Image (cartoon, rainbow, N blue to C red; front, side, top):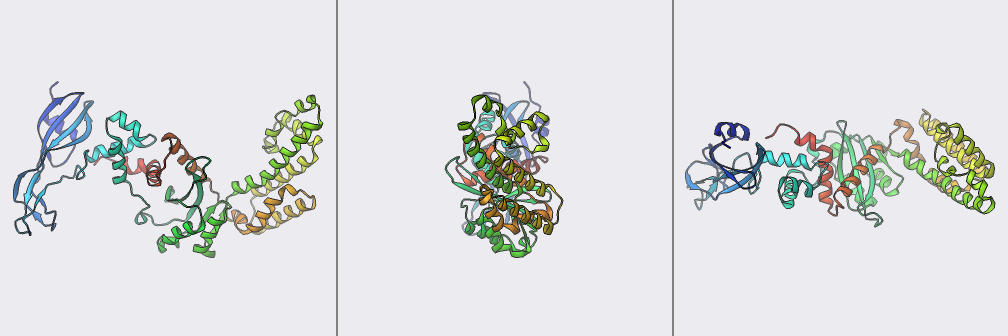
Amino acid sequence: MMFDIDTLQTLLNLPDIAIDRVVLGERRTLEIHVHSTLEGTHCHRCGKPIDHGYGLGQEIKLRHLPVFDYNTVLVLRPTRYQYRSCEGRPTTSQTLSCYTPRASITKPFEQQMLLELINSTLEDVSLKHVIGVDALQGLLDRRIEPEVDWNGIETLEVIGIDEIALKKGHRDFVVVISAYVKDRLHVIALLPERNKAAVEAFFRSTPSSLRRTVAVVCSDLYQGFIGAAKAVFGKCVLICADRFHVARLYREGLETLRKREFKRLRRTLSKASLDELKNAHWILRHRRTDLNADERRLLNHLFAHSPKLKDAYEACEALTAIYDSRLLKSQSKRKLRGWMRRVTNRKLTFFDRFIGTLETRFEEITNYFVGRRTSGFVEGLNNKIKVIKRRCYGMPSLKHLYHRVCLELDGYAQFGTARE
């Protein structure tokens, strides 16, 4: 196959180089020998421009984007220059804009590999494009910052805090702090310690100009997160306990009673009666309005055998109805206090743990009714992190995990533009 030099020059789309010759190598590889069309460089010691030529440097090979389905390698001997007026008369090799010094791939190829890594793994991309895993990891280290760049953020407004376990069952929690920036979700920190001190230290490290833009902090009910937000932001920020964490807590009371009652029913009812209650435990987890007629009949049949379960189920339904209502914060406080009185008067002790939390975190829980903010975006980010961990068979390095999360969230926007 003949390769037209002018066509190749156009397809390479690289500035400041010209093609000398093309060699067809093994395994469908094109070795394209090129030279620089630029004159001069800057002294690596003093930074001043120099133009006194001093021969050619050592040959370098740079992997580039495929051409005609051929793997493409650029072979370049950079021009060397000497600055005679500088102490020691140092020589400097010219570096072109199409590659990073000491890198083995061009910048357009780097950008393509970063796009390939989105929703993939280092190993997969390595096999598909015949490039080393270490080279890909080095690319991530070069092109993605190890921590958030505050200079690119004008406002934070809504911050979410949650935790995720790096290893299932090992309780090695990582704190995930995220924020909406210009209607896009960003991870702004992954902290290795799940405690108040670590979260508070991070918040205080945030530029003061950005701290003043925070309006809402969404969190679960963990004291460390809420305490850190209060210590840094005080009363200027609305600290909102996530609705779904609250719902999970009060439904734990129903689930505790359900296990106890079903254990009792298995001892007292006949097998035929138990068969009639088959799948009733799943129905208890749904709202009555979401049930069909058969499911409602089964639920009522269960309640006939266990009045306590009926009381607990109705208490959960009443609490969910409060959350679904468009209430002012003052109205929600009155309704929640009324709910607590009714539950206490009916001696539904399996809600004691939830009521204790409700009394302790009453302000944070009722702050939900101010703007109906939830940690849904945080939970979505946690799911994305879990997918990344599963895809990569674990991610022990917090730095590498941060790289991958940033790439998943911002990769297409950052690297999907026109190639350099």
